[in-house]
Image (cartoon, rainbow, N blue to C red; front, side):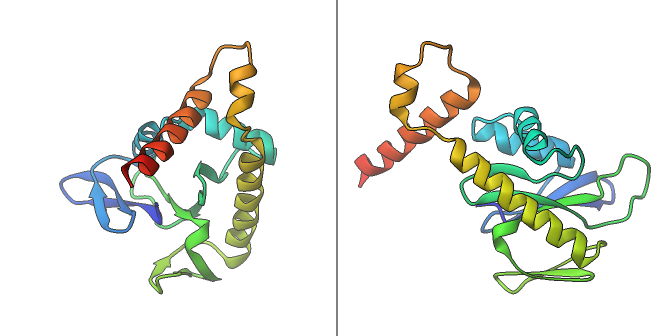
Length: 174
């Protein structure tokens, strides 16, 4: 489960991302590429998820990104730009945020992340993340519905089937 993805500049390497998903690691890609890769691994498309979140929230910029159950990432400004086009916003899983303060966030593991935004802006995005999560959860239909449908399967339909197959594999392995 992803806790956060934060952009960093590493001398000699350029833009990179620090990711924490139970262990912290550096990925030598920009924010956009990192998000696309993470979603691709889960059988999802960043573009389709963004479009859906834009439709849900009726807002185009700085929207939460739904990755999966319990994983909704909110954008938070974490650094100043060095050159034009630098990634300024990191993404933090709103479920791991314990408290919000001006200048920093406290996560449930008691670690802190410095932010360059005020408490009001971050609190607003946390509420938006709750709305997005509820809409995505309400949207999921039982598998029986998909077997009755006469329409072609979308990437999202196939991703849902893959998730169900993985759940069944885990049960069988026990």
